[in-house]
Image 1 (cartoon, one colour):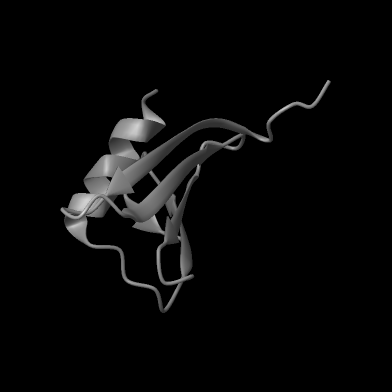
Image 2 (tube, rainbow, N blue to C red; image 1 turned 180 degrees about the vertical axis):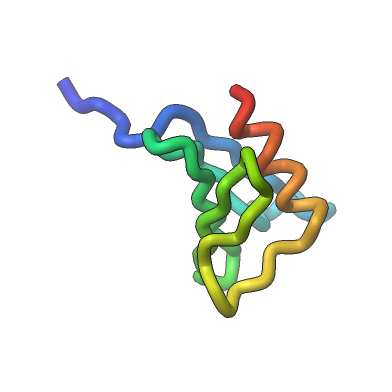
Length: 71
């Protein structure tokens, strides 16, 4: 039996229907954000802190991560 190593995952799509971001709620409560261009950020949805220096996370995307963190 294979167990997922995350609690929940959401795909966000752009206006053309392509996946623009994948948000993954990790076991430790953080949210991993995978961008379509290959970048990856980790955020703390409770505090709104970006835990990945050098990769900006727009406020709208941070709000989506906070929603996922309350799942």
